[in-house]
Image (cartoon, rainbow, N blue to C red):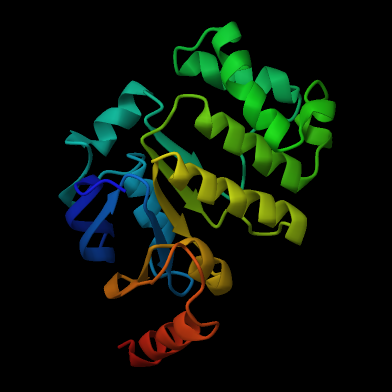
Length: 244
């Protein structure tokens, strides 16, 4: 794991009109690290993920990836920041293969580059048989797997997951969590917003409880192994009860 942060969040505030959603957020994520974001609905986790992705601009502060503003990377469509959300955002009338080539072209990849880069992930996630059928006929788990392949096409420096296993069955969810772990093993900086505390204990190096601000930052011990089944649940309960 790299000693210097790859993703740096410094003094970030975000408001929508008069409503302040996030304030004074300071976080950093190193290459090969998994940072978890937990907290109640409406606490700002998804907004923070979109800010990290460069799809929203902070009202104050800045977010950088290896010194470059996240909003500048998003504007260039460089693929250096990958984003996976509960809605995979695929075109249902296109096949899986056509979706990958379309999004790869947006990031400047040739069809042959897309095919070469996608092949090992398609095989790993078991999508070969469905690749040439329309994604509108796929299960939610299969579409989420394809969104993971899409996010890995450009060798991202940072991967952001916003509730990636919402509405997935346990087998599909397991494939997603394995992909999260694999991304960290590949020295990608990973951020995961989730309500699945057991999964967070298993795969995260650190976990931040976010409720408008970072109210607690927990460092987990060991090689991404759960230290105690109830540890994060107790942190979550305490922080929620202490909320103003």
